[in-house]
Image (cartoon, rainbow over all chains, first blue to last red; front, side):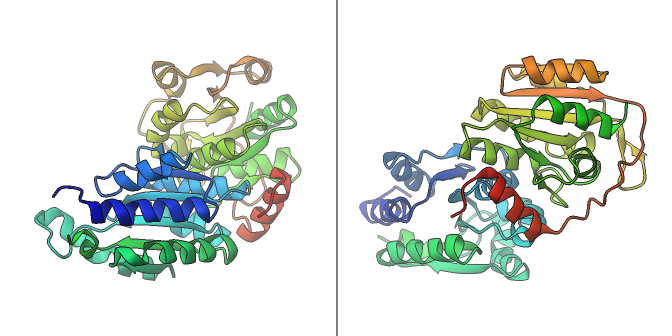
Length: 171
Length: 182
């Protein structure tokens, strides 16, 4: 699938909204669908720091938050499995709110069998830790979802996940 | 030398630093050595302490940051050494407390060698091994950051204070210590 204009638009809109809503630092484990968001963040002076594992992104965000920052993390939903302990025994009990942008795999249009179980488990896993999952299916809603997620994370001190659903890639 | 002796030497050599401690021995020793100072004590999330310290270091580039880690913790989060070598915060020192055992779970031996300083050196991080309090002090004073200090000690005395910290209290005290609350 090529990165079309619509994709670039919602991904750029997300990056712009995060910058406008005061995100100060981004950590990620790279992913194809997240790449245009990363490029957009870079254009706003928020070039993502690449870490080796998803739980490192969570740990990084918790430390940054503990020091007064407004961190953002980006990774594929399969990495949520890696990150569950850091979320459940650090971010949630300590009240370190931040936004996670999860690129969804394993649902509509998935071709790789290995991606399906964790994709199906993503929202239940988040729910099991009391984390709100905000599904983004319409690129036109990118900015408002990003802004609302930032409020939840940085004002209400919640870990909040924006799920980048497959429907976003419709041309 | 025991974990509290090591931690006391690190604290004395880095009085103004922000401290992050991993669960178990490191948190208990830091509580004891600092008289329960306002540090970021982790009570869980094994393997995540160094990543949290990188987050603190990036957010507070004007402050020195020290991360106290158990050796089991460092093994579980070993990939973060590679992230540290990539991010290279110029204000972060990782101190690995090496007694070769998983203390809080009952003292089982690690199943892997302590080679943290050697690995860090391979990753182009400055590093050294200390076995005395004097060597700890010297290393904290002189190692260019980012750095890893591997401290080997034999006395496996439990430091004392509970490692089961109250997370919101830890957060509030550390936020105030770090100086900026939003």
